[in-house]
Amino acid sequence: MKLIAQKEAADFVKSGAKEFRQDGEIRLTPGARDILMEAGIKIVYDGATPSTSGSAASAGYAPVAAPGAYSAEDVRLFASKEANEIKEQICDIGRRIWAREYCDGNGGNISARLAPDRFICTPTGVSKGFMNPDMLCMVDGKGTQLGGTWKRSSEITTHMAIFHSTPEAMSVCHAHPCHAGAFAIKGMQPPPRLIPELEVFVGTVAYTPYKTPGSPEIAAEIFPLAPKHQSILMGNHGVICWGKSVEDAYFKMEITDAYCRTVILAQSIPGGVSIPCDKLPELLDIKKRLGLPDDRYDLKPAGLCEVDPWTQMCGSHGCSSPVTPFNPLTNAAPASDAEIESLVQKLTDEIVANLSK
Image (cartoon, rainbow, N blue to C red):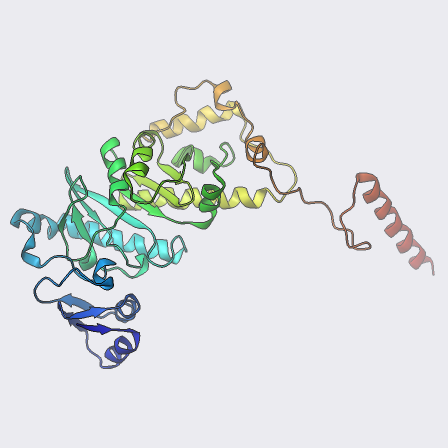
């Protein structure tokens, strides 16, 4: 078997060729594949099914099935116009996830419902920023691969927990955005009632304790949460969101992380206000008209505002100390309002003295 590394891939790009053909005896390293794809070179698999032994194959970088390994019906479905449109959408969202630094290395995965028991998903071991439609896979409701020559994502069973518990879910997006991930490793739900967009378009962000990624245990945790939560933090792992389209699932991810980032920044500023309790039902009415799920529809205003979000943030977990004014004379933070007043008076006296000279 010949392994093509980054240097060989760079030399191939210089040749001016537009297509790279590989078979069971030729393998590309992940770095080499990225170089070819960035250069716009089409990677084509040609030949018999390669051996599945060896680190490259087991990591998902080599095809896992020859074109004739699947049923004729599944082959036609996987090549249909509808499937191809979904593949393009997933690749586009993959690029956006990567560009926003929501995933590094080969992290994250995306899936979409194609038919009642058929789903398109991303392959394992691939950067989401450099996928092409030929790399995507098709699976059934159990996660069994039924289409594609690349190995499907190992976390597809987690996606299935959402698809099976939530019929209106048409797409699932999982990634590791840093700000939402910070809440996930702290074991905290982002506090509600701070920004209208989260209330309307996402709602409360659920949290589930750490379980091994791709395991039946994490799927069991996600299953009951998905019907009423479109965004779920997975402890010490990342975020998983669902939507009514591939882009909608990604939107939930983007809104969740932007919200978490804003909350983290706001913690460094003294004080804090929240959306008034009597205004929250108005936001939930908007959300209900949009046909979006929420676990708070049956709550009365008192229940909606039972806990102050800033108390929730700082309660048992502790917040960073509030920002206090900087004292340029002592290079330290004043200890009290009296000290601040004394400092202001001292500066005023110095200015007046200088003006009278």
